[in-house]
Length: 307
Length: 225
Image (tube, rainbow over all chains, first blue to last red; front, top):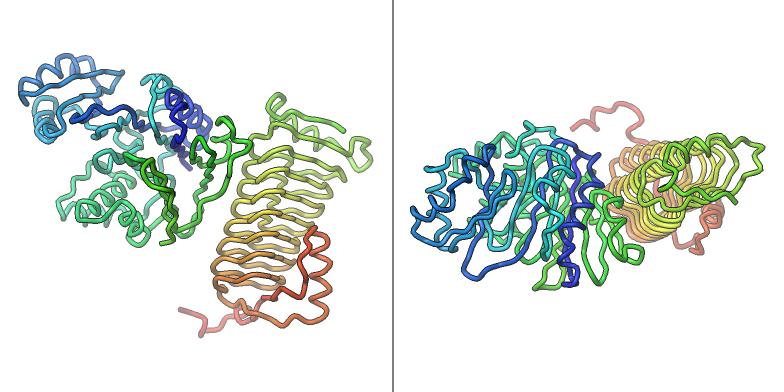
């Protein structure tokens, strides 16, 4: 099972409500997966700055003086906002690589959830309503976001096994389905030097997309080639800085419904997730085609390309 | 007419109320409001009643239907009218995957498009789709009729036993052992009746017929890969 939701706002007037709309959509999908939940929000940007969203199981000790400690080591500006087990570190974009190295050294238990200029990812074990409450997702505004509630099949129920997965700067992935060739693909990617942390199948899918893009593919090309290289069932929703994309495997047994109005484009594993969106009665509602890569973006007109 | 607010009264109460209707009920017309994509609406009905659902539904709407007429004024999720025995199900919008799967009888009319696996393993149901259907439709179909006024996706009628498939538009590809067959006068007559029942104004002469080549009925070593 697993439940996925995505919301891309065309109407800037809805931006303050993004967190609430997305949270309600995800809560509706709770019975598709009670194990863990996560939400990626594309929010505000500060020019020249990057955001690292980090997580710790012992936030009180790990986050206590983290901003100061990091500031001293990288000799740059660092600001930190903590929310429960997560903290968002804001720093100069060109110091991120150094900061990640330093983090490994000074806080080995702190894990990076996401890296981006506008992206923040919050995810934990638990039900969508509890996870959203812990991180106060309802109060978050933004341009677009995606969410996931997990029914674990391929690996353990942990924070690191929760979705969304960060696949590159300002990019993330959620997955409904199960990959059957993740073990061989993990070995192949590790041999190529790609870091993969867990035994989770979706992390391999995310690492595959990252690797493809690092070796020259666009996100669209990476998604298209995933149809050949990934074996198993998947409906993927990917978040990008400008919008989001959807792709389903050729068998397409994992459900997907899309809705579009003048105000938004929305994705749900089921129509139920979309029923409380404003103006849904008059939305264009359809099921995305199998083996077709769809993109919506704030900067380009929407595309749908059969692979 | 009885009106039932699904959001206010809940799914169990709805299906229990509908199941309590007998062949002699006076309450023959029902309207369900606020379906909001809920699953298993009007499942397992067995009385000559008419149920109008005002909105879109989730999984398994009108599954296992006997006698009843269920009319959905919206789109439907996966497995609609699955294993229907008799009666009629009409969908004004689109249908998600495996609509009418394993149906033994009755009529399913989809006025929009149906997605993948429509009529998979159908066993006597008649399905009339005004729009297109997705891949693997009528997989292992055993009996009944599937009428498609638009186009059919990949692998239509894969491993089909018997069942008549009528398609007006293009067929992306035929599945194993499914072939185009001659439209004889008796097929035109059957199709005309189906189109009328399916409230469809397409002309029977515009359709092509597909069915089983009957080469997979018995073990044949040449069929092994």
